[in-house]
Amino acid sequence: MMNSTIEVSTRSQLGWLDSDSDGILDVLDTVPDIAVNREGDYYTGTAQVSPLPNENPMKEGSPVSLNTIAAVQYRVDQGEWIEAEPADGSFDEPEEGFAFTVDVDSTVAGEYTVSVRAQNSAGNWSEPATVTVTVEEPDDTEEGDTQTCLHTEIAVSPSAVNTGDTVLVTMTVQNTGEAPISSVVPVLTAPESVEKVSGPEPESQDISPGDSVTFEWVYQVTATEGTLVFTGSAHGYTESEEEVSSSSTESAVEVCVEPLLNSDITALLYGVIEGASVTVTMEVHNAGEVALENVTPSELGVSFTGTASASLLRGPLPESIATLEPGDTKTFEWKYTVAPGAQGGTAVFTGTVSGEAEGETATSDTVKATVGVESPAILTCFIIATPREVSVGEIITVAMTVQNIGQAEAVDVIPSELQVSGTGKVELESGPSRTSVNVQGRSFEIILWMYVAVQEGTVTFSGSAQGTDASTGGLLSMPETESNPVTFNAGSDDTGDTDTGDTDTGDTDTGDTDTGDTDTGDTDTGDTEESEPPPSNPSERSRAERTIQKVRELLEKAKNLLKEKEKKKRDVRICSKLLYEAEQYLQHAEYYLKMGKYEEANRRAIAALLKVHEVLNCVEHM
Image (cartoon, rainbow, N blue to C red):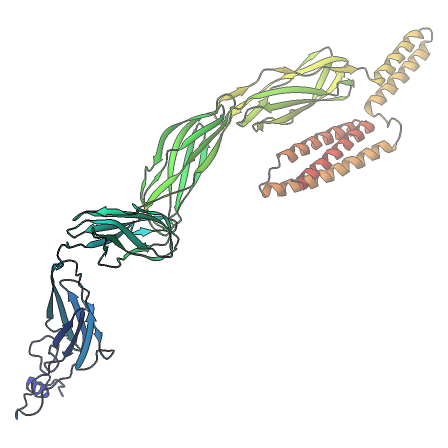
């Protein structure tokens, strides 16, 4: 088998030796040499690679070098390393020239060390070459003069602002000399992206030796993003009226203008009433791009209308949310007990929620939830009997209207049996039309009975009803109420019988005739009671039958339309009541048709027809 590994001795002969095991072959593992010259603040120099001595067996030939200069850097004292400029535009040769400028603060006496280093293409740095710069104390050689010097520093706060915010710019001017300086005036240059609100304050100031004065400006930020740079200096006058300026002609402070903090919080408040308690829920949503911390709802405000009232049982739960990430939604919950009072009303809950983001507080708009507090169901009723005057044998319709004047629903309302009093007599034909009803708040329901007048006189109907309050479960009852009186007159047939009876009694002498007349009278009267012929027009019956048939067809159509509306979750209560009334009219018409009273049957059928058209119109405009 062939082994491709090269032996150590062979690698040494080829120059592939890494004697210090640093991953760089010895032929490349060298450090550059560097030389530096200074002329004032301007520095120049040369950096070159260090070649590896030729160690061939004959000891002949030139040193070997495969590296190039890759970079030159400098720094002052222990500051950050700064890139120097290559003399030919780029560092890529074994020997490179370089240059840079160092502006040492000449106002502060002391020694400064400028260090320079070079790097070769193998990544090795040279030992830094250093230059020591000494700044002497200024010395005024003119007799009678005293050293004077101004030093300025600029500061801006806050360091991060948004559009529309204001910043405070301060310039501190110090007299570092030994003589007083009078009428010191600051000069500040602001960027175009700000507008001055005030300043400088003060406009000028005398400064004693060793003292300092701070001048202030206020600016409003108009930029949307970027960096604000303020520069400035100060100047004043010595006692000999010579102008003195700050040695540093400008000072700059950068203030980063951050984009508007994209933090936003929204809330939704709603309440659900269950019996005598209300659960109020606040949904909180982080609609911004940063996480919100310490998300806390405000205390809920509660106001009322009517006689409603409420008191807090517990909440909010939880009291706060530690962190709400962008796009997340959480809920807070409160529980209240409510009381409707005599009239009921509404409870209106209001509140806000806030959270913290990057030192700022985001607060939602005020949200509101209105909860209806229903007054108890209160039942009343009245009874109407129609028509108010009928003949014996005709139908009386008794309608009990059950009203709920409260707001809560009354359920399982059951009418009592009607009591009949008076000189007349009736027989129950049908009813009650409904054995129980549910009555919505502020609404009513109608229950019908039909009676036949059987004896002339006057009668009234009385009754009551009872049910259950849907909100409290309490029993509801109402006092007994009485209808209007109804008068029953003797029918025309009864009058004929009476006349016949009188005639028979008068003809005592002619017994045969009396008997015959009596028999004939009795027979006629019987025929009239069993099947009364049409009163005048034989077509009355067919007209009544046609009208009744038309009502039946339209009623069926109306019922189907109402079923379709119910499937669509529409409120069909009003239309259903009209339909019920139409059905009652139809029942009356059918009853009179059966009794052979075709004119009355047709009249009731026409009333039913009109009512059905009301139903269809109601459904159409639902």
